[in-house]
Image 1 (cartoon, one colour):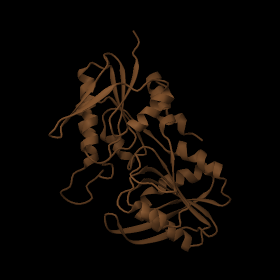
Image 2: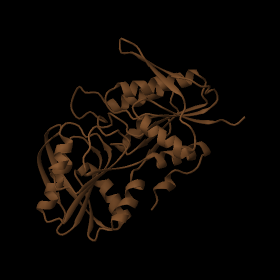
Image 3: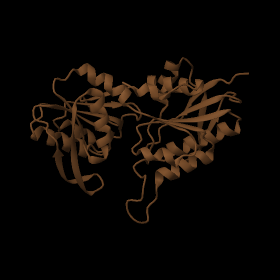
Image 4: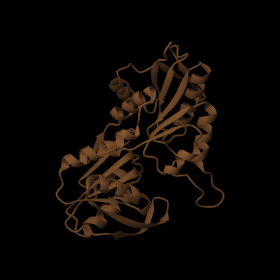
Length: 310
């Protein structure tokens, strides 16, 4: 008897899981999260999943309950005799803690990988990891997807006459270079030095943006300090316009205020995280068609890398 694909969701990303299930052509699986008076919670699958291919959709942004809920759902599926358990984690939280950047700190993203595997996950699907090497933290297959497959068609339809890609920091140089190659244009880099987390001391531009239509591309916008400072730097150096493309819109603290007060014409993000705040400058593109396609390809053992060839 062939196995059946079932898609379930935790509470944090249900809005996205419903869209994924709709695109896939299947009703979202029935799971109930019971909350107790002391704050504990208990996930329960309300349908038979024995021998099935289970895809659990949950982004692991703050609070940590979202991650622990995912672990419990994986554990419950394992104990219910699911055939395969795949964690679909559109936004992999704690990914910025991928190394020891100072003494006596945790490598939290490695800890998360260990916990997911201990719970019983057999595959992970995620989008735009903050650091590519996090894939190596897992001893199970990791399908690392790229928002470029969503952003590139949108950028092309803008038909900007003097397009230049830009990275708001040196860590994103490779990302900007890949986009520039796909779009056959130049790219520039911002070099920044931080005084402390979420606070930039200095920023300098490497490259020429005079009379260019600049697109800043990044994986995360948190407080929007970096992206807006980079946008100001572009305009100060003679750019015609500045747009920003970001996969994971954390948008904490004064992010919306920073964006509204910046020269950025448009901020294009995906729905890997539900928007805490929004404004007229923000446009959301859905990852549901991409994730539904990848779920199909994983189930049928088809190529995934072909999705990202332009």
